[in-house]
Length: 305
Image 1 (cartoon, rainbow, N blue to C red):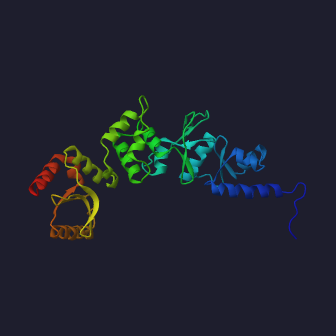
Image 2: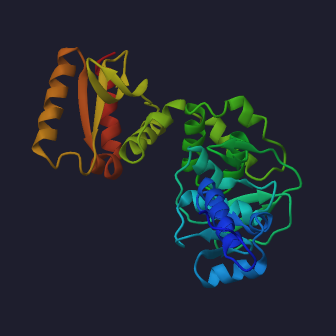
Image 3: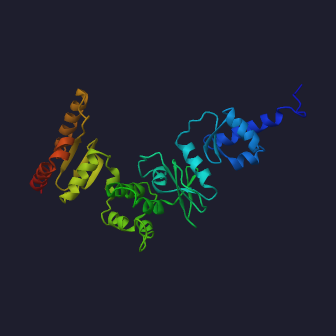
């Protein structure tokens, strides 16, 4: 016979635990105090479950269900719950969640229409009103506004790349970013400089050597026509079509295996057979003797005019 729930039985607690597990599963293992209350779990039960390690306090009024460790999504949800209804991921956290900035900090940035103090793990910014959009189930500030927010927080090099990545991902247009600018707005001056030097090709360069080489080419006014494109069956790092010149870049670890070197030789032969001049530069050459690389590239481009 099915178990009956009578006075003093543990049935209510068991039902609450089942509902709690279901809700937490949809929220990457995180619940808020208000949600616990809506499930009929009072403060006394909540305190007892914390002692029993069924719940783990993450922030004031925010708990993890089950094991205390949270992944990235759980930490973001916990910060949003702490900031309260109407909150959104913002700044570098929003840019990372949207996919156009690499997250380098565990600090979660959120904005909220409420008054909430920041915590060691959560940076809270109060805003009377702001627009929110949903991205991968979480509320974030719109991409164009997010770009303006990070303009005062990241290096100019990172801002340029973020703008290029956001456009490449079709999250923003240049006009939408310009519409966010205004006199006296924090980050507006840096954003104007980034827009003035915007180059959509930057998003197709890999961070590291390719990015360094592209910056070098910009400094000496020799920017390639395209980057990371397929030519004669091979993916090349940079190409100047009119001059039929291709540059391949060898990272610090690119030639540790002999099969990589053999593959590079096959690539160079095929590209030369297709009529291209192939130049190769290493990380050390690009970063330590950029003037020699620039002079060598200029000579090759002039010879093929």
